View 1 (spheres, rainbow, N blue to C red):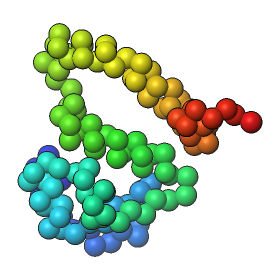
View 2 (view 1 turned 90 degrees about the vertical axis):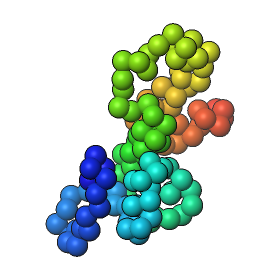
View 3 (view 1 turned 30 degrees about the horizontal axis):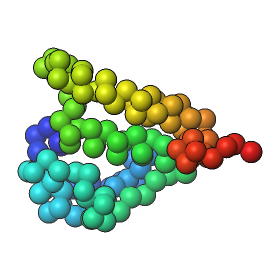
Length: 123
């Protein structure tokens, strides 16, 4: 329960419907909740992930949302879109456009997105 910063153990996961299942030690998750740090758990290999067939794209969206939340962008607040924010992101507009293009290419296929990112021509 992220909002109340409580950890509850899920003993029976056989009947759950899920795209990806993240397994993590309770103490690691508890520390992450206290410090509001989640994205480095994946880098440090402190969790194991089981992704069902066809679910990798949704799992990657979820990990991206975790990073955005951790960065303080979510939940969106009115003060977020101040002058400094807008000017800063206008400077990064080409990068933002690339992210949007990759998002739409990922919806078609991972190969198409990889080709775009790497700059290789489609054969």
